[in-house]
Length: 493
Image (tube, rainbow, N blue to C red; front, top):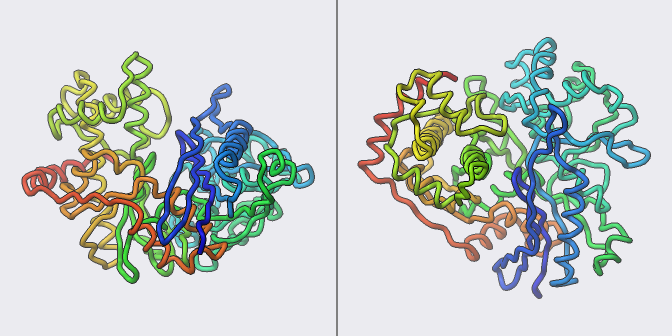
C-alpha cells in the first residue's frame, strides 16, 4: 500500500496539537504541524473552556497541515472526557460556553443527584468511579442554574462538539460518552431509565456510535479555504485515554497493565466486559477500542506538577519540567506525603500553598517551612505510592498478575517519575511511546479507512515505530517505598 497520511487533533487540558501521521511500509512517522495553549477561562467565579478559540486553532491546524500535504486520508479529534457543549439543534449554535470540569458548581449537582440515586446503585448501573466532575453532576448543576439552555438543545461531548464546527454530525462517540456516568456499560448506550429518573430531557441525548466510525466530511467552504478535499472526519477513540491505550505496545493476547500519564494518570487494563464489583468502586469502566472496556482508576497525575510550575512562573521562576525534577531529586525523600487525589488539589491556582496547607492539616510537622523542592518531592513520592496502591488494587480486582507496567504519554519523558514508579510498584516499567494519544488517534483513522486491517496489526505498527525505555526497580529504593506505604495509606481520603 502506498504511503497514507492522517491528521490527528489531540487536545489536552493544557495544550493542543495538530499532528500529521504518515503510514508507510508498516511504520508510522509523526510530524507536529501546530501547537497551541489550552486552559480554563475564568468569567466571574466560573471556569469555562474557550470553545470559539479552540475551533479557530483547529482551523489553523488544518491550514498548516494542508501546507505540508493535501493528501490527507482522514481527520480525527480526541480530547479529555466529561465536558460537553449544548447546541441549539436548529441553528447549530452553542447555548453557552462549555463549563470546565474543575468549576466548583459540580457540588450542587452531586447533592442533587444523591437525592435521587445512591452512589452504590449508580455504580451498579454505570460502572463509573465517583468523581464530582463527572458529566452527570455537571449536567444536573447546569440544569438547576440555567434550565433555559436545555430547550431545543443537543448535548455533545467536546470531541464531537469540535468536530461539528468542521462539518461533523450530531452523534456522539462511545469512548468519550462512557466517561459521563450516564451509560449502561453492558449495552454501551445511554441508560435512559436513569436519565428519566434524574429528569433530564431525553431528546438532548444524541445517538452513540462506536469508535472507528465515520462522522461527517470536512465542510465544503472550509475545505476550499484550506486547499483540501472533502476529507472524511473519523470518530476515533475520541476520549484521549482511549486513543492512548490503543498505542500500548502490547503483544496480541497478552494482559497488559498501563498508566496513561499526562495531566491525569489513568492506571488500568483492558477487559472484554464491565467489572461492577462494589468493593472496587475507585475503578471505572470506560469504553475502549476494539470492543474492549478500559478498567482503570483516575489519579491526579502531572496536574500537580503543572500547577506547581505555573505558581513558580508567577514568581518569576521559569522552571521547565527537567528543572522541577532536579529540584525534587535534591530534596529529602518521604519527608512529606500527600494524597494526590485529595479534593484540596482539584481546583487550579495556588498549588504550592495548597500542598503545604494539606501537610499542615494532616499533622506533618514543619510543613510551614517546606521549600519548593520539598513540595515537588512530596508530589513525586506520593504519585509513585499512589501508583503502587492502584496497581495492587487492579491485580486484586481482576485476579490477574501483570509482570510489567506499561506507561505511555507525555509523563514518560520524566525519568525520575518513571524510575520512582518502578521502585514503588516493584515491577519493571516499559515507558513509551511518548505521543501515545496522537498515535492511537491516527491508528484508529487507519483502521477505519482500511489502511490497517485490525488493532493487532495497529499495535505491531507501534512496536515497529517508536522506542520504549525500560526502568528496572532498584531493590533499595523499593524497600524504602514499601516502608512508607502504610504511612501513605493512613492519609485521610
